[in-house]
Image (cartoon, rainbow, N blue to C red; front, side):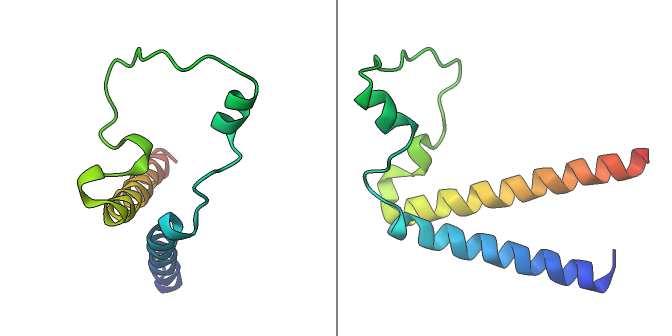
Length: 95
């Protein structure tokens, strides 16, 4: 890996962390997303048939409030980057 590639990866990780820290505070409390559209269309509520419960429902860790949201978002961003790196290494070895 080239030195500029490492620098680019570090900058990308820092940007992900900054976005994760800011998003709970600037996100709308009443978003116009899929759930809002379903409510407007009178679609029945979800049936809870999950095999495994989510460890962080709604991207938050309730005991910590907003700080919990930031922590969960940072954790999710880092796990996604680690998984992407792992897939890249597997593909690189096969090539």
